[in-house]
Image (cartoon, rainbow over all chains, first blue to last red):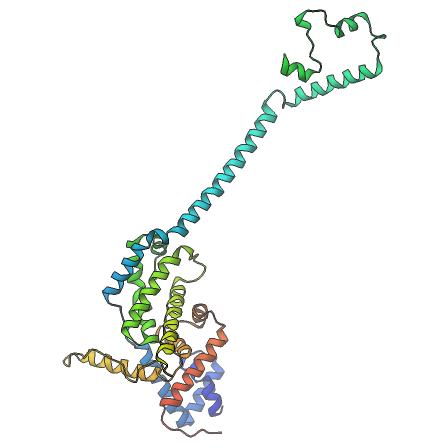
Length: 171
Length: 184
């Protein structure tokens, strides 16, 4: 190791950051080169001074000035926190509203008479039969009982509103 | 170690918690600022500015970085901005005085005299460094930050930090070392 190489790694040598091989080479060089040894001692001494530098503390008046400033500006300063809170509240409210709408829809479809599958199936089956009857039969071919069913005889019990769904809502 | 609860409470605008946070952090914040500026009055102004900014921006601190490097970053930025303004205003090549002003220590207090001597030596040692080199040396050698912490504080690549530190140390050696003969 020459002087230039030693100088390049001097700081890491002093910090103990070299691997074993480099450390031994540096140590060997310093042992034989008084100029580098002198430079190493000098740098070490300077760094030690910096490490022992006094910690300065600010005067109490600095805190008083800070306190005054932040107390005056407090409403403005906490705006970001309010925004965050407001934003979080909106998110929670949106999720709650979504859950409520979903639950209502589910309840309507599964619990109400119209929404229940068996009613719907029965309705569709009756409707299919009705359409089939309309297409396959004419009133001429209907039996007397059938014709009676289709004609209003003035009895409100037999009042027919058309389809079964209309019956459901209008009767 | 700064308790997280102090940071969280301060972020909510709790002045008592913020005062405690200030008591924990102000010595090292003020020391860094003072070493960069070397004027008590300027350092106090910048410390004040730093903590007002800390209070303002704490709600945005997300614990993704160390609080210490975050606060160092604000302090260093405020101090360097102040230093640039001083250079522009005073039009000097070096923003530092030839000698540092001290209050006269009590001559019977040996510790105070030694402290002042050390302060004078540090002032002399740091004087030939430019503000960026000086900041690197302060953070590394006085405050004891790691290369990674320095990179986070100064928002710089670690290699740039190493280069700046090496140049700064070379200047320290070249300026103050005893004459030597370079061996080939």
